[in-house]
Image (cartoon, rainbow, N blue to C red; front, side):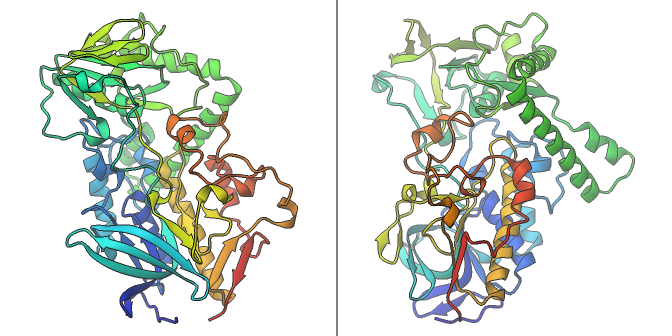
Length: 503
């Protein structure tokens, strides 16, 4: 099946055909579309998005105070300067993404309200067939493509993770998971209990504390927090002396990434020293006499889980002002008035908010098959966390946890476009990755080493994820500072890439 391109979607029988199909119109999908338009302008493409609007995570989450927990100078795309405070609200991020879409003519190619039901690869045709339901009218539609670019994220946007707590049906107040928050909920002058202590809890607690009667955070174990003013002194100074925004964006990104690299290495080499420095930053907002034991002394090493950013120390200001009470304990059961902890204490609340994380969703939970055989991702080995053995013409964008997600969106945009142009150059219609001769005896391991990074959602979902090898090419090492050199220098003629088929 040969179809001319020139950036036009074409009907082939009952299907709509494009060269590249991007799944998801969130931060990954929009960035990927930009790079495709810039670097492969002759390729036709479309974006399938389940929601009625772009934004992904930033469209899903509606809880009070929702904001980035990465600085926008690196979470923003490298090609569009960020102008504003480093930590931004969801609305500011959506505005930024909307500008990218409008400035680059991407909106025309987004098909909103399309839920993908199945993706099927045919080696006879060297095509992906993507079956979707158009949610507006329930119509089944089919898209075909030469290359599938999975940018739908890594968690379930519809079903958040809620532990199986005993007696939750007994509770007479309002229970809601943060991911399912309705902005119409009135929490003013209410007793609010937040269960959890990660980035989401760090976001909602300061917002609740502004008008709630009182806020309690119940945590099973403490989290590390990084407190700082919500500004970037280097960016502000460069603006003051008249430097243009593209230069400011480039220089500030470089400075932040350098600082993050230093911090990451120090967390491994001298975690106790780093923790003392984090405490000093907290004291600037909570006072010199602030007590860290037992509620703010984590049991794991710094950066073994995500470091929660606390702009202007807002969580600790709330604690110091008496608006926040922290309880470190297990949750034994729900009661009519609240919850009972493992130690027997009852915490009464009018509203209980679960900030307990999310459910991992590999490839959006979409069923895949290759030549009629159902695909189990756990049976594959990942190539740098983006391609998978036995799966042709597909890349998955999975970003960083210790650095901004979008850094890898930009990096993989270059990679995919380079790969597509290389395929054109060698007259190939199919590419997949395969273990090399020197990899045949390589030990095959879970997706990520638990001692490296071990948040609950990853540990709960390891059986869903592809596996890794013990060599750099066959894992997603979460190390931007290594990958920023290795991935751009990829040799597409390397023996790990297997090309087939001419036109």
